[in-house]
Length: 210
Image 1 (spheres, one colour):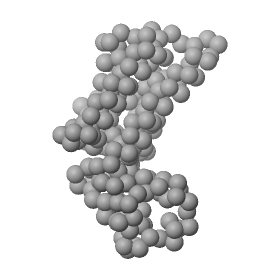
Image 2: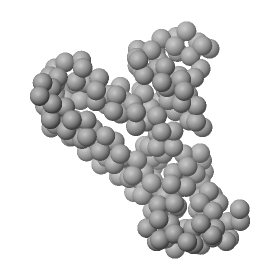
Image 3: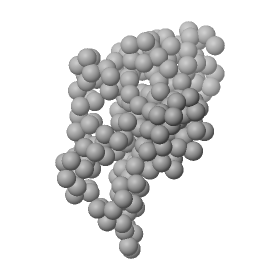
Image 4: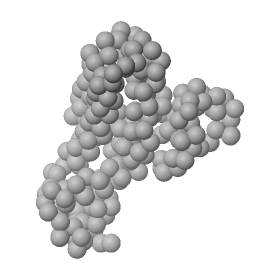
């Protein structure tokens, strides 16, 4: 499809729907090519619209990436908030000192990052710290997630650090597609097993991590 002509589908949409279409396409394009390796033209081709249309809608590539990155980060906060709300609403909730409590929070995060585009956009954002506005956004998001874990669970700084560190290890293993290559190296299989646990078998079905 030409990058210079908006698709009939896009022109029939409302402004809000067209914006959503471009953001979804941008997530796919940035996941594939990263922050520095993806142009607004690549996003336009993915969305089936013209490159000038993307620029009119979002301005610079940095602003477009920041919005896509913000959406990925917001999904993390929303997933933790939702699971914590469910736990707190239960008649007999697990204790924050129990393994079940943290396994449920970890499970909520694991389901989230099984979305390959979301995972890779997040990873690209974290590694783009040399771009001032993206780096500031990433740092603020990490502080927000840490604060959420600390305040909603009442855990120690060390426990919050351990939980977040486990999540970052999960990110790396999924980004390198380790779960679908566990048969290649016993040590890798062992690391995946102790990191993913029961989720390993589900992760073996996640092949679209690019």
